[in-house]
Amino acid sequence: MCSYMTSDGSSYPRLMRAIQTGNLAIIEATAAELGWVALRDALGILLVIEAKDDERFERSAVRWAGRLALEVPDLDLAELAGALESLHVLPDEHAQRTLLALAERAVRPAGLRSASPPNRRSQRPGRRGLS
Image (tube, rainbow, N blue to C red; front, side, top):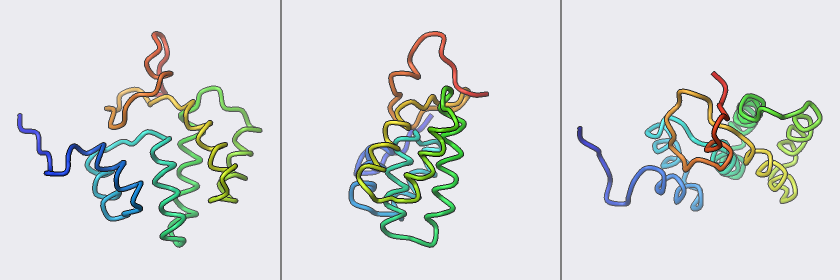
């Protein structure tokens, strides 16, 4: 089996660099290559979209909120409402911290290969993501 790697490294580090530099074209290509991106990294992508492409932001924010609801097993309605409000006021720093804290609780859905480094919760024995 061949593994293709570009001169600038593997896909995940390339995605992180693209998020840091705000390069939407590389973000899109690398995210497609990875197939699945952890919710915390998807938040970074969302922030780039908010800064660079207002036209796509609302649709992307709704999708991120949907993933939050599916991937955080113990999320309650008040937290989801707070997340929606935080999405609405981005790029506010407090909103970013709130959303990141929620995203850190996400558990990768079962059956998906990991593109991003696993978070601590997803490594706990007996914990499973959504089917």
